[in-house]
Image 1 (cartoon, one colour):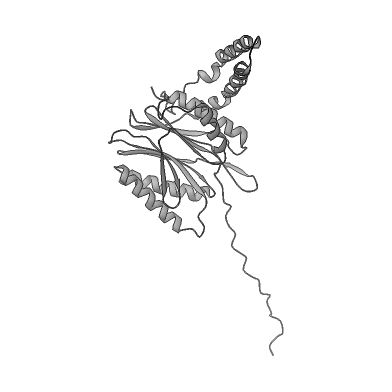
Image 2 (spheres, helix red, strand yellow):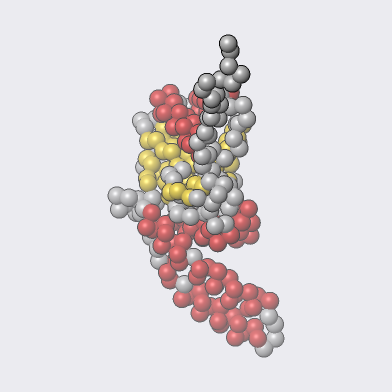
Length: 286
């Protein structure tokens, strides 16, 4: 006789649990300056519930023929980091010309794209220096599967905080491409990240690299110098706020407002006197 009910209850297999997908969509920024390229990024990745973790977003390599630093903003931080390490190792081993650089990046991104049913939104900002060619500084914004855009105008940013840095750069810091001394470009960039941090709660922490075309090497920027510059950037806001009445006032108020603005500018020593170094203590751009 066959029992009407099974002797052992049938337990359905549980659905496979997806690993939490960390996002690195906050901010990364590239600057072209005199004799080099600066690449900066925040150090915060987060989950949908607001949980955050400290994350190193810049992948860097320094070899015989090429040096590079590439930062990601992605809907899947771990997958993006895997791709960046593959790109970096392949460039280090095989890239000796700009044609090699483009071919390798396109091939790696195409392979990565094929692995997903739906590719996570991902952008990269990179500085690349080929050491045995005439020095050329290129900032690349990369979007899967095969798009590489070179930015030669001096600035590029990606991520949630880029809307504010784009606005402020266009208003205040537009120079000729590559004309700024790296120390000045770093102060400007620290201010941009300070404003991104104020506008977006996930833009936390800072990490950065300088690709020195003069000495043909990659320098890891001292994080304490970058943090000091961000912490002192309130002085730039103060100077702008004080200067505005002098700019717009007329008549008897003009002279007194101009004097107040002058005194504020002279007192902004914290941000003006910061000198950036690499982690070994070498002055950047010296």
